[in-house]
Image (cartoon, rainbow, N blue to C red):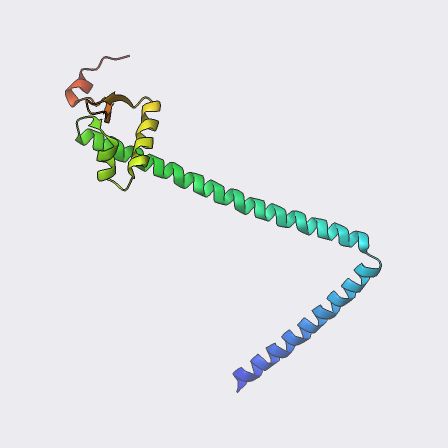
Length: 149
């Protein structure tokens, strides 16, 4: 019974607070309507500015997160392509990448073209017209025999 009386007391206090707040808001609204139009305009502009900044900040955060995810995905794709090329003695096609990964044929071709643009591989064309990308992979022996610069 003591528990219920405490909730009743809290409920009454909450009701009194809500009524006092409502009365204050009504009086404030009457004052703003009669005497404080200038302040009302300033408050509306300030509120709109804060809301606009909040929306812009959320949008920018979302864009930044999306860009970070795209960069991470591109890095994973590059590593996958390099690993598959190493397994194929440095030669790979977009179809082989597509078969051995989640990348579509089109995405695999784009990723290979980006690596070619970075200078990571060279493009060759087979007799049947298939694009073959060649990655220069050095053996352990070739790495040891490399000259100092």
